[in-house]
Image 1 (spheres, rainbow, N blue to C red):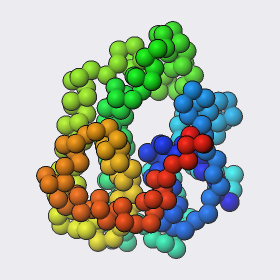
Image 2 (cartoon, rainbow, N blue to C red; image 1 turned 90 degrees about the horizontal axis):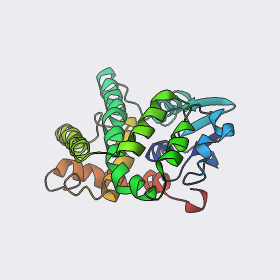
Image 3 (spheres, one colour; image 1 turned 45 degrees about the vertical axis):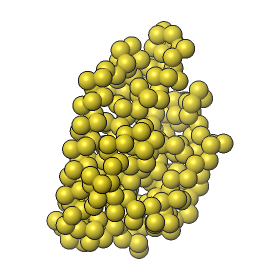
Length: 243
């Protein structure tokens, strides 16, 4: 049995839901409530994922965490629908994009989203209450970063740098997609899945320069084809009653 602990609005959760749909796998919905409830920091969930983040996959009692690790796990275990290139060089390229989806894209859109969404939601909360919220994160790095943002916010310089780093990676995508239809070669793969939810997050954040397809036509064509896949609507769907 497959069960997914996830949040409907989480970009990393969307990656895994897209993959599950591409592979035609049935899974049990174990949506974790966010917002003021913060079930991800509840003791029962921290026993599943001590980092207090989503998604987490339960496969017959085996817990797999971190979205890109989950993607590769699903590929290893359910290989009938192949989403990993057979060619070693293309496979290496796929893993390069999996890494960049987290180390560049996720990291920097998270920085930008703080000022545009999180800061506004927490504007009426005092620093001591924010400190108490940060202390609920069990891992030191997460606690420290949450507290730094709650205390200092995200500067204009940080946000500008984050958008520049995202633009730089999108330029690399544009170049890659000028030589192959998909990010890791001739076949749709986990590489494409890993980036997909973040393009939608650029739109939500109003990053118009990043989604100007006249400047990056190959990327625009890729995005159109991504959205035409049945897995897109299935994986990106929201059930706000469970969010």
